[in-house]
Amino acid sequence: MADGNFGYISDADERAMLDAIARWIEKKVAPVAIQLEHDNVWPADLVNDMVEMGLFGAIIHPDYGGLGLSATTYARIVTMIAEEWMSLTGIFNSHLMMATVVQKFGTDRQKDYWLPRFASGEMRGGLGLTEPDAGTDLQAIRTVARRVGDRYVVNGTKTWISNAIEGHCVALLVKTDPEAQPRHKGMSMLITPKIDPETRAPLKGVSNGKKLEKLGYKGIDSGEFIFEDYECDADLCLVGGEEGKGFVMATGGLEIGRVNIAARSVGIAKRALAESVKYAQMRKTMGKPICEHQAIQLKLGEMAAKTRAAELLTQDAAAAFDRGERIDMEAGMAKYFASETAVEVSLEAMRIHGGYGYSKEYVIERLYRDAPLMCIGEGTNEMQRIIIAKQLVARNRV
Ligand SMILES: Cc1cc2nc3c(=O)[nH]c(=O)nc-3n(C[C@H](O)[C@H](O)[C@H](O)COP(=O)(O)OP(=O)(O)OC[C@H]3O[C@@H](n4cnc5c(N)ncnc54)[C@H](O)[C@@H]3O)c2cc1C
Image 1 (cartoon, rainbow, N blue to C red):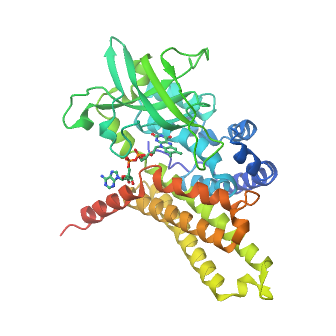
Image 2: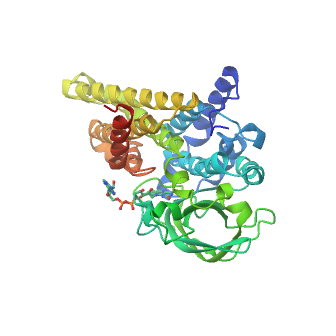
Image 3: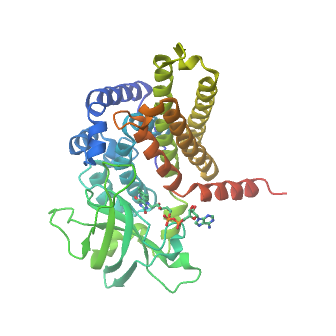
């Protein structure tokens, strides 16, 4: 079974779903986004709405209670929501990356156990890769899981984990053989709940430390995961039931995550552009709207072309994923270009808005603060260009 390219809903159902989400954004998200973001409040009501709309199961197979959306539809939804408040997309997308690990690599028992709980939003979480001394260089992680009978005992610290505090579990990259050479052969992926999935009682040996403060991406919690002799059931938790596969799961298996970051970036850029087109017609200087000054026209033209190109690259990667193709190069291109575009377009939008762009009463300053994260998450843009280049050579050998 492929990971997410199901497309189980008809075109009519897809339109109905996109319409319902558009109405929800307008009625429920738009009125509160600015305030909740500035207050850095986890948006409990909006999360409940997203649970009810099935977004926590968006790309989980219908056999497990998910919506089984195609990557193309999923990317469209992410872009729409990110146009209003990008942080919301992080709450269900980090969760879906955890779910994708199980869906793509888990044993039948693990899928039967975890996926319905993930799809319903009953157990929410994220992806736990990064550590204080290891981000890009994931093979340098130090979190260790040792097998003791039918259990794993985990020790180590993860940081920067989205949904760490409000979530209930995490897909955790660990070393099961710290001495292995090459290093990636000693890495495995575990599903590690903070609460008992059945009784919902807190489990021992895991805590979250402090909530991390950020430039943007507020609302969603980013935190640490500290494991101290934490124990979990090996059969349920070791994804795929085999040690040594974690690095592949974390790096090669999650191209959909990069499509997702690209889609979020497109949302940021589209909103910044739309606000700029509006504002440039309303703001007058030297007796005419600023959209009639050539300096502003040059900006708008470039912003529009780049935003559209980012959207098309994202749709292209999502469509290739839906056809079941390998998309590391396409997803890398979309993620790289769309995120750089989000940064550029949000800054240009700020210039077009003049002093008002710097005001906390306008959405532009938030787009400007949110955009840079898109260049860092799901593999930095430095790494994306390296991935693209390697694929270019691999696909065009002389
Ligand atoms: C708000 C936020 C949310 C996050 N959410 C999550 C999450 O949910 N789960 C999770 O696991 N992590 C998460 N992260 C962590 C994120 O994935 C890492 O920050 C990212 O992978 C970069 O790692 P680093 O910060 O350790 O930077 P480093 O790896 O130290 O990199 C520093 C710089 O060096 C460059 N660099 C590093 N190695 C190379 C190389 N070989 N060649 C060229 N350039 C290189 C990088 O591109 C970067 O510019 C989050 C981070 C933030 C800020």
